[in-house]
Amino acid sequence: MSQSANEAVPNPQRQALERTLAEVRMRVSILEAALDPVHRQFTGQPTWVGPAARRFADDLSARRVRLRQAAQAIVTTLEEEIRALPAYAPPPSPGYR
Image 1 (tube, rainbow, N blue to C red):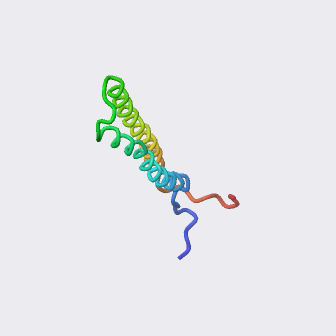
Image 2: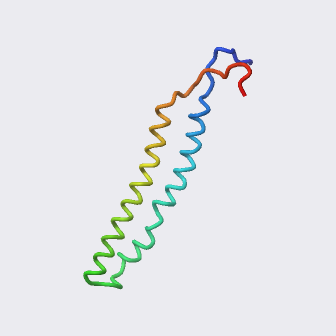
Image 3: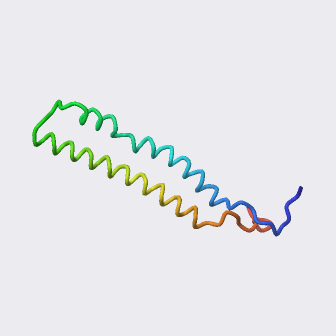
């Protein structure tokens, strides 16, 4: 079946952003988990105690939260960009390369 010259086509810019979002989500899941082993190890058994250890644990936890928030902000921004684009676009003009 041939496509009419007036039919809309999938928006290539949106498709590219959707592919990018899929890749970013995969990498974000790795990034979000980056501090988990260290956090588990440090908070699991009291090998270091005292005020300095508590400050370190608090700082580690805060950095872990900020890392996850920053990673989610990237995903959210891409999702917003995708929602702002129409799913379909007019077909390219004849002679478009």
